[in-house]
Image (cartoon, rainbow, N blue to C red):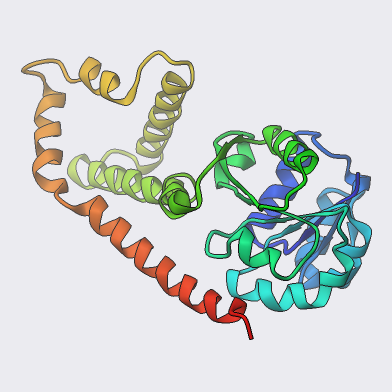
Length: 274
């Protein structure tokens, strides 16, 4: 099976690297294209076996499964260029949340799947959010699910929960990285601990915590209860978090959902019937 990736920016590159490093696909079966050719050629330096196309049309023509990894509002114009090449027996995979499978199905006759990845997939870990078009062939559902299982835990998500699920899975690593960095910086200012040491300790902590959850030793509430001994130091810290956190995460979700609504409205204009 030939696989194509159109767009080798952040997520397109991550998918390419994860697929090849996991050996989910052979380099010779992968063709990539990017508006800025230099980015695609950078990947070829690392993975000499891949094919680099000059245009998206070449990828669509050559591939059985095509991943579109461009910005949401660029998808409509891109599909205008390649729609005739996406014949019924092929599968198109979009990785962006604001554009629904139903909208894409109005423009193409092939099977359509939305698979929203996470940066954690680069480590062959984390989730990938799946939604399937109404006309998607069951065989393609299985093929794409199996492919993404090599680099993630694919989870099917209903359309109404796509945004909040994306906040957790796709945006979450950036959010919690920001919080952890703030924790590190506070420790440095408070005690003058060496920054490299503080970063090493925090990184080891978050990795270890992930392993506890992955191996099922604790749930999140159980982990807090286990560490937060009655009358202990951790409990004092939890009190500060409880009083200071307030509506932080509610406000965060208001912001992401507000931007999502804007993107939905702009996308709706593109896909509105003439």
